[in-house]
Length: 264
Image (tube, rainbow, N blue to C red):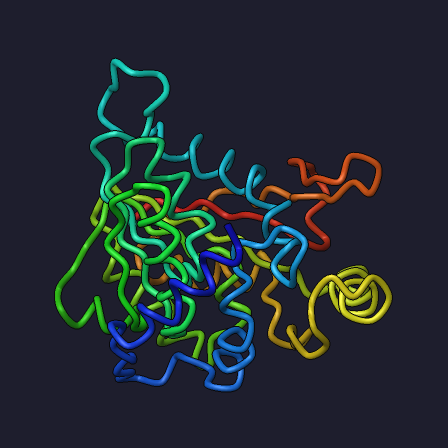
């Protein structure tokens, strides 16, 4: 499948329009790093392997949150049916695809046009209808778009302007809707695990993928979101087990964590 994806990317790349970024939340250097790895989004042994292992834990958070606002579904296999969902920083579609399979009408947006090409190609290969586009969150906000749920997973630590990004999030979530964020805390442990271990020792991700100074603490996210009309729930830690090779919910939010916020 990976070889097929690479061939398909070459055919589709010229159909994806590069984003027009208005208020500058996109970090061009970060987008460039991800663009160079775009043809390996769906390779579980490639540079995005850690994100593949992270999908089940993130989807558990997303699914549980969605069920508090989704219309009652008669099909337990599609608990997100009836929800419009925006996946910001969707990359190759690692979360967009399972959310679609759970019944959501998903729009995926990413400033990396090459990543969007990978997402479009893979969705076509597996027969999923997902509205992908190259762009930034503020582009959709400027169009007046709004969604029942907005997911920004492993994104906020990469944006160039956190305040502008939060403004866009507030505009994109409908009143009564949900925002789901996952990110990395700024602690000594996160520096050891997300920078030293992940980038230099285990080499799970390329060096320079993360900037520890840009990791937001849960308190900083709360201070960012509450003035913009969100009721922010307590963070949920997501801890990786080397034995199990997977992430699971935890009270320990010193490294990875998730936050769910409801728009008032």
